[in-house]
Length: 324
Image (cartoon, rainbow, N blue to C red):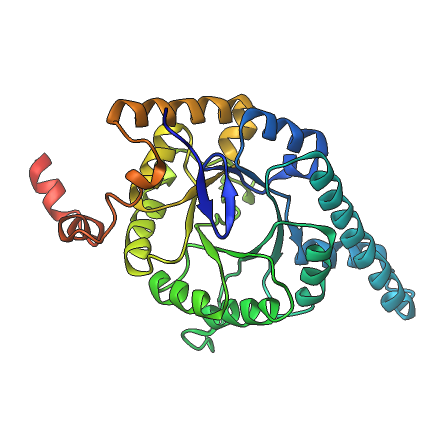
């Protein structure tokens, strides 16, 4: 019988399917449901730096600026305290790894939060560094350096595994992943997704695009997973964005990933998606004669020169010449 067990960032998982951070992973009942459905781990809804700032601004009146420090400290503490309570409750109810998540875009007071997250019992911490660099005075490499500084500072005070979730707006994921590993990161996730902005041409206003990913979004993560896993074989990778069936899980593993983070498919189809995905992967493995995930993980990454040629290809010219 084929086994779905896998290692990711120092965590032993019974399945490569990790429930990615989303609104449902803020619910203890949902977390328990995901475990029963066969999830390998759960990433709690992110503790957002910008959300704390917005809540503070919304509760501090311009007429009473002297109250800002008091109220901001109170609200920050309440948000963090509630989050720590969720970690403790999830650990008490579940046996699968519980991964906390901090969504930050500055090198600020996250070290303090990280220590408290570790003390609350989280099995690992995912650092979700998302930002747009738009200044004309931007120095190339500045954004990547922010990632490295955050990892260095957090690693200095916590011992639990650190997972870094990267955005796709990185100039060289191989170089950054190598530096993050050197700074103490135990794993990376490729890739995070930006808030989908759209435009209403009738109202001449901005609106939200489709919040969910689909299989069409998977290609970029597969490419870079195949490249990074070959270049830095000791760094575990999880694919995120576009895994909408067991086939996406298998593709990710073939590219060199140890696991996948899934949110959209689970939100749309419910926890049963996890069970179906696990069953599909296991059936595929048995059909191919694979006993473990390591038997085929990375079989299509850039270690093989022929695979590398396909992964490094960026032009459509040959494709269109064949079509026409």
